Image (cartoon, rainbow, N blue to C red; front, side, top):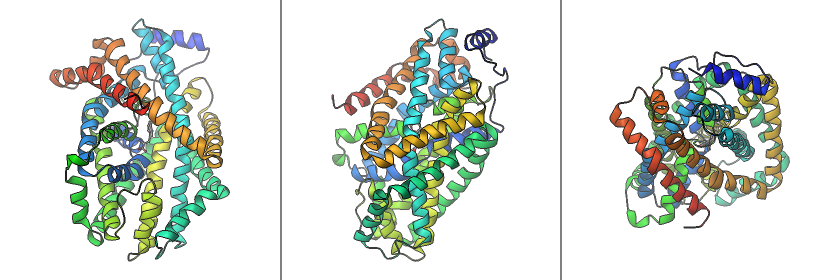
Length: 454
Ligand code: TRP
């Protein structure tokens, strides 16, 4: 329960009316589906396979799994509990929680940083989401049928240079995102996740079976699960750790705001474990769907960010019914990107809403800001790259560190335990030690490395 007194003082301070009954997800499964929709995105299907390729395969996958277990899951539990205890968007939730403990209201700045980070990520994320939509169209048009490496590269180059075409797709991506978020938490995000996530999983598993049957599955298994530590550099460890944060959508309030809609009686530990397992499972299955095609066509697994838009079309273009399979694949990427995009603007929308602006109008305002930022990314790759660099390498690690510190050191142990009431004392203690010591140390290591200080 939220302290009525703190709610009233907040109301008084901000001069707006706020409903005392917080919105919650309608079904038990909705949090799990919405949160896994938020976590599963371009990070899993586009980024994970190619960074695995670049970092030597199996050993990298193992380190990534360790990072998910030791850092990702504990911080995700912390962020969810902050949301549920604060019962609001990140800015208000952080202020409320800090006040309740008699600590500085400046902690709401951490929420503010999260809202801002989400807006910065959506600006370039929606452009890549637009590329995925464009490739659905390219598949329908049969653009890459029997393409060789040069044609496939040229296809992507054409898109990258055609600003108007990118703007059309980016606009459509933002409009779709806004239509869902504007419809509301349960009727929009919840309902869309309930349909799109099962669809995504079915498509992905189908694709993995298909590519295992037509592609080179044994090389894939060897590549992804043969752990040769000699191929693992110090940098790979850091990349694995950074990716664990990005892929679980940690540290910017996405998970916090989704947690704020979680019913009081659901078990945070179990739900977070499930979401992390789904996210990781989907990343692995994405690898199992992509690499067999790459190997069967003699392509390089380490071909970088172009793996999805340059190498895969060659594979699709040269196999039976490739345009159909390719179209389905790019549709899958678009769905994954879309359900993540909801979570990138929801903290900002929910904040405006709490300031008294109607949800639909809040969504339009935020979507317009995101759209303008996207234009800047289309016109300038410098803006695109800086937004990516700033958010992933600086703001997310900083947010993660502060969330761990706030949960482990600022909140009282009883407050935290109350939210994690349904896990055993042993698990709670293990988690508490991790959140106080191990997670901050790990994040500091990522942070320093990204700044090239270690
Ligand atoms: N996790 C998503 C992906 O893998 C992206 C994402 C959504 C995200 N919300 C986020 C990343 C919040 C960091 C923070 O594509």
